Amino acid sequence: MNGIRYLADTNAIIYLLNGNDCMKPFLSEQLYVSIITELELLSFSDITEQEEINIRSFLAECCILSLDDSISERTISVRKKYKMKLPDAIIASTAIENGLKLITADKGFEKIKELEIAILDPAM
Image (cartoon, rainbow, N blue to C red; front, side, top):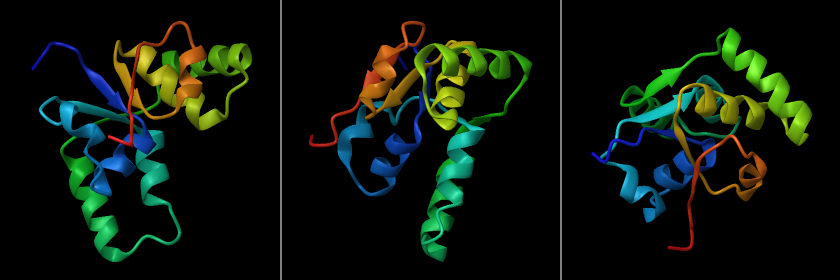
């Protein structure tokens, strides 16, 4: 382990579960996940029973971070300042408030100056 702690964005987990190797460098690390990512992954209307089992199995290996007052307040600030969708603002705020580096393929997070990110290249 390199001492850096990571929060995996929803798209990062989707790439991993679909067999894309772009998440491979992070698999030896303890991964954290926002409750928003858990909700997004499990609420897709067209996932199969096996896909849900795979998602739940993966999430069981992660540390799921719930919303608290500091994340809520940070979310309000981030959403206003950067004009983001609410789920993305919550995920970014969860990473910031917990001192985690966000793993994502979404370059839209780069505009958040308070956020440390690791951009994935799904074409790898």
